[in-house]
Amino acid sequence: MTTKAFASQGDLQDKKITFERLSEHCWAYTAEGDPNSGVIIGERAILVSDATATPAMARDLIRQIRTVSDKPIQYLLLTHYHAVRVLGASAFAAEGCRDIIASQGTYELIVERGAQDMKSEMERFPRLFRGAEEIPGLTWPTLVIGGGNPMRGEVPGRLSIDLGGVKVQIWNPGPGHTRGDTIAWVEEEKVLFSGDLVEYEAGVYTGDAQLEEWPATLDALRALGAEALVPGRGEAMKGRANVEKALDYTRRWVTTLYQAGKEAVAAGMDLKAAMAHARKKMDPVFGHVFIYEHCLPFDVSRAYDEASGIKNPRIWTAERDKEMWQALQG
Image (cartoon, rainbow, N blue to C red; front, side):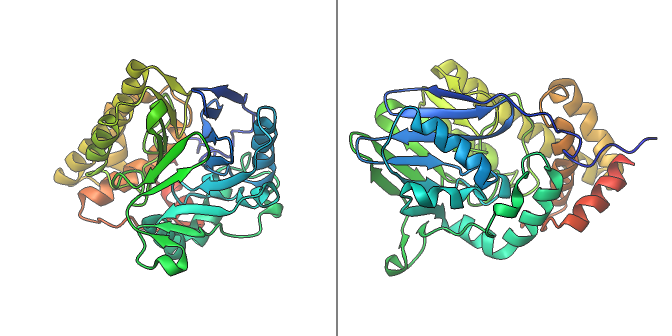
């Protein structure tokens, strides 16, 4: 059997960028299954949700923003800690960025595994990390939601930011894609920026997930009644029915995957057999979507671990990545 190219090392084709308006103040920056960003433009300032993978990619996002507004980009939200979402942050310093916001859970994950994640993701996604030599290092939040010491820039529970004419609510709705996932919600315009808690027609990466709790977190997002959604990957969803479609898609992926993992563990399968078992359930439904083959080995590994009682996801290192990939794909 020929071994498949590791993760997304064979994915070298540039994606088409779409920058579109969803409401009076909210915009979506999407790229055919690559990680998305969201933009909220007020009369006084701008908030960007997710910083992209590199400063070069972030500068492209900034160029798009400058076609519609010259307001300072004062706030940058890290919806979670993964390198493809956060390592472009340094490009925003020249744009007036005052605060980099994240949850306490995300801060803890950066401390615990940010360096390993940075190395492993760079090897998984060579196209996304072109120009990585510009990255100054890990991205650290300056404002931590759910921390215990306001004197250190930590704020409890939820954060509300008035950008001038539009208010943004930021909080962690529960564990899912990671234990620190953070959303931005513009209630007056019913626009939700979900990060990787919600995806649509793209692989749902669950390598660091809390699979058992994720569906309840999706229920909490559903209860908001969003009428537009910027998911972590996939097209921006417009209209309540399309938002529901993305929530349903993500829930189906997560529940199908975790059920397959539980069945594999209960049957005493090893990881390779668990992969074959998961494919029988996942391939017919999701096999056609962007980065499916990239995500599935990491996803099955995490589902197998969680079903085996490993609640805190094991840290992915570049070495562990390759060992797992060779065991499952070779």
